[in-house]
Length: 406
Ligand SMILES: [Zn+2]
Ligand SMILES: [Zn+2]
Image (cartoon, rainbow, N blue to C red; front, side, top):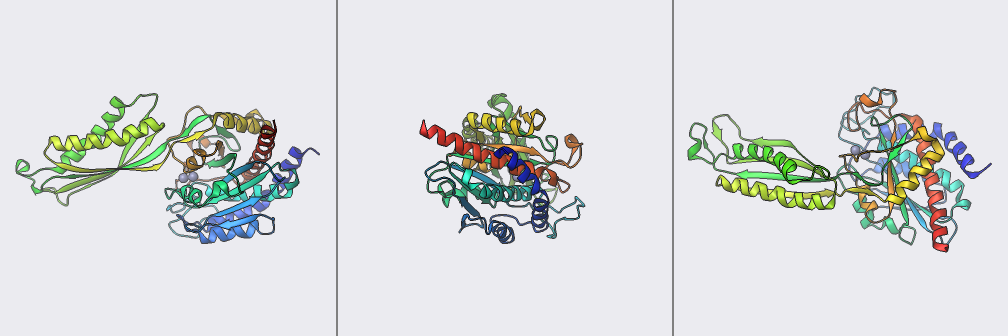
């Protein structure tokens, strides 16, 4: 039987085990960079596979290296492991046992699929044209776990810089169950923060002229930032600014000294991102100065734009189509406004990030989105994720070894 068919059968045979592992991880969600329970589960399931395993020092990551034929290239596969501060409302029988924490972004499936790929590939190590690095990463949800793992050397874990990198993210909506999608170039937004404190002078609400009212200026800035987006940014290189936190004052007839707000900023190019960092701050400072007030406007860079290498995206699309047919792959038209710290890997290693539809029902278009307390993901998609991870690794190593030889 050809290797591809054997792998497909092997991945399908794992279905039951994968569901069990996923349910265990789902019941014990952990948030942030310290995920000791999840790390233990990962280590247990990697045990006996003959991998070189190291764990993180500044976070509970697991890096596992599988050695194939010596002297070959390296491919990196990544799965993130962290949950969200969400109270589960799905009603599934394997629901979270930790109040206030839930795998609402499907990272329990990511961890499980990567474990499945480690098992499958280690059984076929003789057929690997190089080494595979499995990157089990904590802290994707705003903790920059990828940045921490890169600082600890994950990209060079096999002894050489990874030649290519792949990752898969499941989606509770977005696309039908079992279907993969991705696109060349920009895939997801950069995500940054803007924190603004307007400093006025408190006083009596009946005599605003005798005070400096920071509330009206901060409120104006919320609107001005929307004008900044539409008047200063190209509609074809868009930006999103959303003020999700606004706080000032104690009572209606008291003008407070300060008003503050917090915004999330999404951009899709390095250029727009750099300009936003400059212009949003300048706008806040100058508008406040116009009313005789000062402002602290602090722009914090978080995750960069997620960019797929064009050739790698074409390769991943071709492999997906070949494995799952034309119905199993849909090209993605527009980038998503969400952000990902896998962007940090893709900034240094050419690769591709893909989405996999995992909605349990046929109503994917109206299903609760990732991060919702009701976000639900279907176990049945995991063998597909395992198979794609494995095939991408095998074929990328074959391709990169051939390229190095020619
Ligand atoms: Zn998420
Ligand atoms: Zn996620």
